[in-house]
Figure 1 (tube, rainbow, N blue to C red):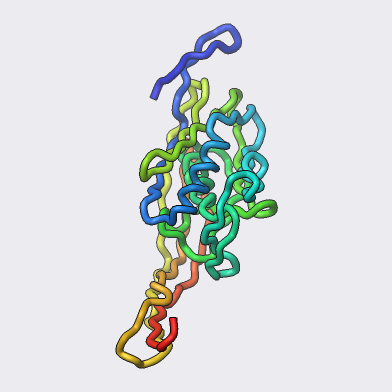
Figure 2 (figure 1 turned 45 degrees about the horizontal axis):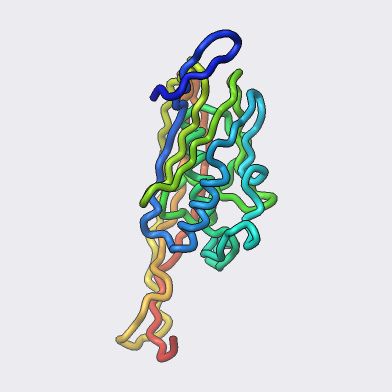
Length: 235
């Protein structure tokens, strides 16, 4: 966990990993992975000054075609549509969890309408430029560096700082409800194809303890998405 050595205020301090997190890219569409990679490249190496806020949208947005992003599935009003930058929410989610592990105060965070597949319900961080953001504050007295890399099937985030401060952080969740999807058949014909695979609904609390101080981070509700089987003659 100890990397390069820097000089600050007349003394040397090691660069330490304050918090880190990994999510899997496996199972995501090619365009979603592409967008997550571009986003990671833009954020890698960014410095968050002491006392200042990290804003995902300010540092990375907008995710438009002219900036190299592609159309990919995103959740909008409970429906999946193709939009520029689909997949960047995986990057914001991974950064959010690294910030939680580092013990940083979270200023703004939003859940998705439906629970995403790449993270546990209640641990996601949805973004949409310009008004749905992820923000957390660097409350240390030194800059914090983002190390964001898409390597193979994994997206890795490390928050590093030239600091002797390593907080004791525990994160846990309390599942309050799980609603299994129903099977909805559009027609009764024996040959069917899956129009929607379905997704369970959840209600979950997420808690964190930083140096013994407990805090409820969120209570999130994700509706169930029913499994739809289509036996009609057209496709």
